[in-house]
Amino acid sequence: MDLHGFEKVMQRYLNGQATDADLLLIEQWLQHTADKDYQLTEERKKVIAARLLHRLKAITQTPDVAPVKSRRLYRSVSKRFVRVAAALLILVTSGALGWIFRHQLTARISPVAVKTIKAGPYEIKKVQLPDHTRVTLNTGASISFPVAYTGRRRSATVEGEVFFEIAKDHRQPFVVHTPSLDVTVLGTSFVVTEQQQYAAVSVVTGRVRVAAAQQQLAELAPGLQVQYNKHSRHAALQRINVQEVMAWTRRSLSFEAAPLEQVLKAIAQKWNVRLELPATVSGKAFTGDFNNNDSLDDMMAAVALTTGIHWEKTGKGSIRITYP
Image (tube, rainbow, N blue to C red; front, side, top):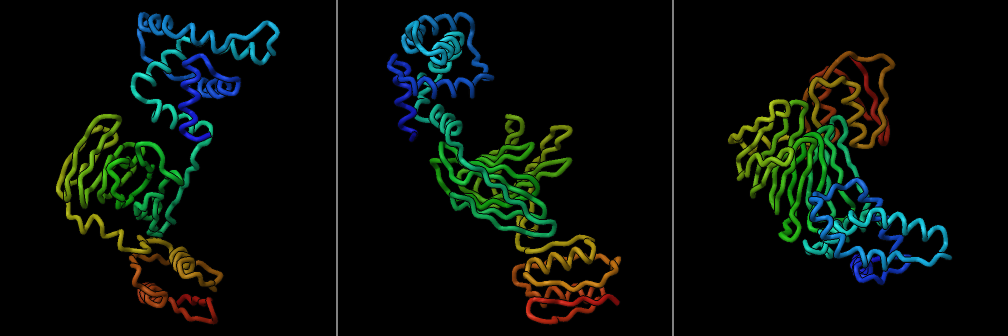
């Protein structure tokens, strides 16, 4: 069923003309919203009930010979008519028939798949989202996003350090969620960092709004960063060097005192070559960064120079390593 069809179901429900199939669809929505608390006073509930009860009864009225399943559905709906009426009134009066209800119901009946991508232990990974937003994941960072954007907003959920270049679309603001922050943008570029002790947003171009637990922290212009202490819940605003903040995005691999064997395996995986390693562990570590312009030979030469190992190509797609 398309989104326009959901509106027709709701209209038939309100007009007392719902079919059995409509009732089952509404029942699915009721189950989905069973834990929702519509903040209405008892007096307001009575007013709503008085207006809509006769419609609900008309919709769910069944003869005595009706199947057991239909009678159960009637009792289920009748017991909850106040909550249903409240929900329907909220949807109608807020103009949400075309947006809120249909997107919630669509997600319930035909949910949009969510894709998760994670950068490897030493990998800087580039990702393009369905709206052509470009994302760069720092080592170990991850992003989850729907395979298609519908509704009034675009969104993604991230962990670690991530650089966003948001595709402009004023009709669909983009919201980035981290475990502690919500960042709202229209079209801009910025870095989101989520660490154990703090979270930060650094703006490169455009403007963003940053919130934590629904509390507005800051509106940032280019060259500004807000850092949020997750324990004290204190936010600090400061100026940044944009080039320094973005330096990691120009790398393809990054190592900090990483075991030599892991470094070699990461390089081999990047270039799709097979390694012939000694049986014993070297006990050596490597620190260094490689960018997208570095070739396989450049990387291996740098590692060899730093650690003293010897390497040679032994055939197509194969490298032999010898420790000193």
